[in-house]
Image (cartoon, rainbow, N blue to C red):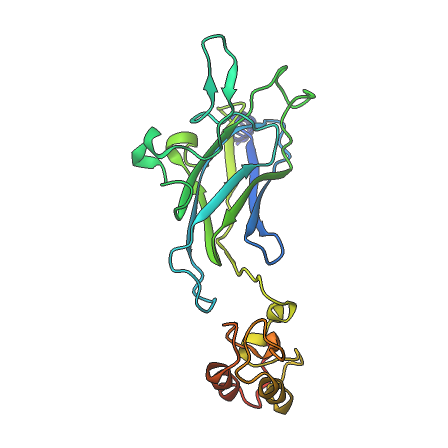
Length: 266
């Protein structure tokens, strides 16, 4: 029995430590920007990321684009400044163009998404610093923002590992022998609201013009005052524009009718 216990203890100490890296996403207000952040308290640093970012239609949003695109990707962590696929270095070792975190499709067509102005990008970004190690003043920050992604319309965003560039986890550690648990975020569905403040009310699109949770005579009154008025026209009330078309008309009356005398709050 003592021999068995000794073997188990020996195996426990011999097993590699599990590093944990968390990747998360959050929309900036109601805008078209999503921030991708990282969290890791491990001494073994993440040296590189290789990730696929994909968009699909947010079907929960009325009239959302069935083919939303990624417009812009910006690296926010200055410690991950090396973009392996696009950085340009001359014969003297001088960086002539830092490049972009978005990988070029032509580099590896079998495992690279189409790129900007499409519904998917592959990003690759790495650190290069000296002296190396977590105590280095030049080591990349392991907790905080990593990327900014701007999209063309309301969409659902998914992040997965790009296996060809960073393996099954999507990250490359400073100690490649350490086992890493990477927690990728659940898909994030965002709604972009660029109109009036009342369009941010959770139930305005259901006929609740005054945000009181009830669709009733007050909402009908708001609609009546704005009847057949459009954006920029005197008397147009965007809160009564339930389908957010820029005009109060029969479509808005139909929405009001469907939810008439209902309490529309969850």
